[in-house]
Amino acid sequence: MLENTAATSIGGSLTSHQRIAAGLTAALLGMFMLFGVGFAHSDVVHNTAHDTRHAFTFPCH
Image 1 (cartoon, one colour):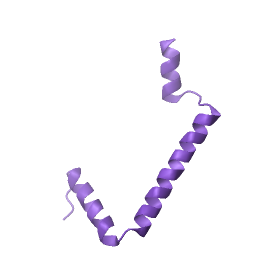
Image 2 (cartoon, helix red, strand yellow):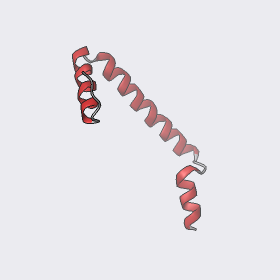
Image 3 (cartoon, helix red, strand yellow):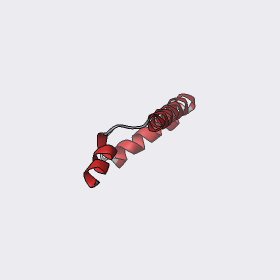
Image 4 (tube, helix red, strand yellow):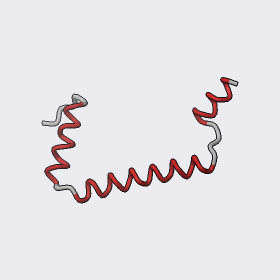
């Protein structure tokens, strides 16, 4: 029984409700990211990218 549960949670078949929920979640997250960056001021986006690069220890200048 444990093997079946592990296989289903890793890559097994999903129900239609789970697929719809995953698709809607991905769409909402994508729209939030697109419009959030699209309507943000360019200096806010630049500073966020700059801070993220430093957080991952990538040199940027």
